[in-house]
Figure (cartoon, rainbow, N blue to C red):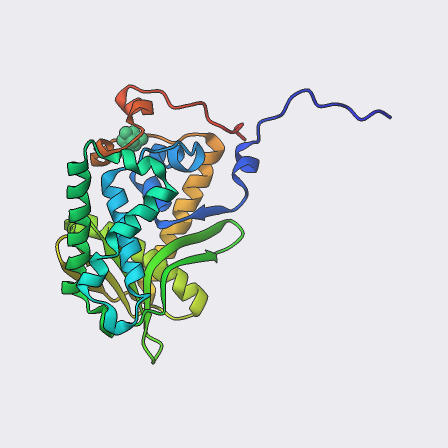
Length: 282
Ligand code: SF4
């Protein structure tokens, strides 16, 4: 019998196309919490986003603070760290040549680079890297909670004492947020703490937010109960996202975030039309 020839390629259904297991990072979870449509644009449509000077500065400063710890402890000085900024910027531009287009003039680029150097200098007022030997930096963690949900994300730094106490550290290049926004920053760290608890069986002793611009450090001691609450919240978020994927309904939630949203033109809340949903609905 002759094998039938398929004359069209069927679009995957929402279930097939997205896989059975949902993968959530703190950023994607925050996207859905803030605005389901923004989650769709980023995680399902995977629309490209132009680089921003603010986000790129964050990437640059994180790369430099990571590099600082490659040097022997006694050589980790502010001057040595600042000297790493220019080469790290060149490396970023080689990886993503479009970054060179971020600035309208050389003066603008130079000012931006100086502000990145100031953040790196500021770090030394908050911690003494000569007295720290992190167990890991820029570490990728991934944990399967069950067949339907996987958590993943990059942790800036993990410090572990000889007694096994764990501190999760996150560098922030923005200013210290208001109380409401601080909860969002802590959500990210609790997300990481939950992953560490699941993989190592130890609740991290401390979550540390290092705010480089405001030169402030916020330390927080999470409890087991808080991490259980975080897990419950993530599971319910995952159920909501899975249901939205199957129905194709990702509603816009206009708010303060809209002014920074790179997809405003496609958003119905701002008179736009989203692209067709890429999967057949189930
Ligand atoms: S413009 Fe606002 S409401 Fe629309 S997708 Fe972006 S964040 Fe959501």
